[in-house]
Amino acid sequence: DSQMTQSPSSLSASVGDRVTITCRASQGIRNYLAWYQQKPGKAPKLLIYAASTLQSGVPSRFSGSGSGTDFTLTISSLQPEDVATYYCQKYNSALGTFGPGTKVDIK
Amino acid sequence: EVQLVESGGGLVQPGGSLRLSCAASGFTFSNYAMSWVRQAPGKGLEWVSTISDSGDSTYYADSVKGRFTISRDNSKNTLYLQMNSLRAEDTAIYYCAKSGCSDGSCRYNYWGQGTLVTVSS
Image (cartoon, rainbow over all chains, first blue to last red; front, top):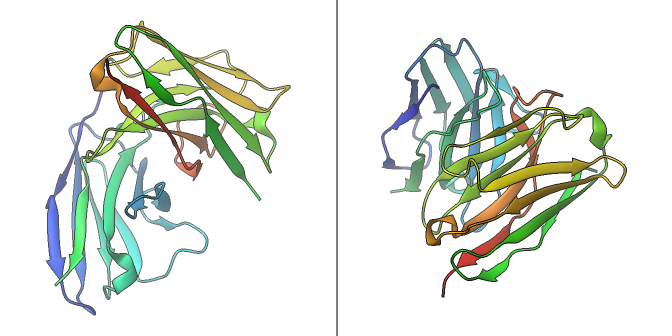
């Protein structure tokens, strides 16, 4: 089954910066890729599915792209409330493997 | 409003058993696959198990296969995770999550708040 990697493992950026997180699958997964945001002490929240479809209610500064094995999550203008850990997840099968996560902080 | 409420967590000795429950409301429970995802202290998310809408198909991570059993009661809108032969490395917050489709090959669009399982002597 496909394994998922993410880079970087953590990053620190200024408010208003453009932030990009990369996720890679060990085998092709077409566009069966979701992104989740998890704030400290909270449950994960779905941000993006089908690699690029924004979940209802998620701010438009979040976007996703990619297909096959390489995917990206972009925050166009980082806000203080975006401090969180971000996880990708493949779902081309019922074995929903997650990436190891990327922790985003404000510089 | 979709709600998922987990219960059943607690402190258990190594080798012991525990059954987690997840009470669902706000959607037609029998139409969607459900999953369990766990998070060890300070660690990332780990997919544990998924069950199809009817309960006919179940899937497990290698780390829990043979020890954990996922099940559901569609008449009670409740998801379960029976955990046997527990190990220290099973210590985690366990989340139940609703799939966006019936067979589990979907994003998880709703999550519960989690229940903590601690395996220690």
